[in-house]
Length: 194
Image (spheres, rainbow, N blue to C red):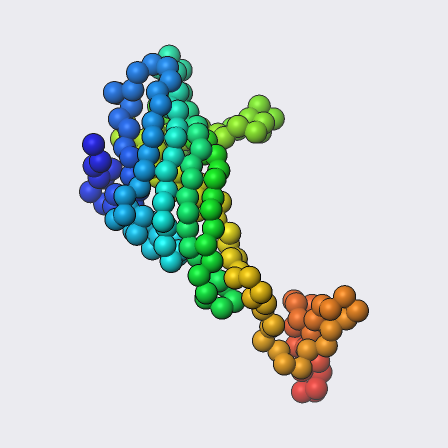
């Protein structure tokens, strides 16, 4: 049932297309599992060394009278990221929830306009349904990207900094680093040139 959304847009790496016209009014359960090729392509997109597994158990709640569609559930991923200090492999297990809201009556111009943030509370705002389809796999992939550690570190890996002549304060912080220290050095250089 996977198909390209438009001729210009490539199919996402982990795509599970749901055609809104085929959805029953009410709640439907859906289990997803990425195959080896999908995991490899998604790992490349997310700058992972590997994704060993990616599964999700979702419910799709369609309220036809209002045009509301809600994808909600949990996913499990086992990934390997490169350490930001040593590039050593850093394995991680991610168990997290995913919630996405759509509405078939919205269009791109409506999205984000006149949103009452107090009314939304903790709920996700609705996105427009494009081309009569939603992609449950891509919703999971996007949430995985948000849940990943942006700065994974191998055990014991420490970043020692670039400067070899740094001076540390009483808390061990480098007094010669940071934006204000850089501005002070620029000011000092300009004064020395006078």
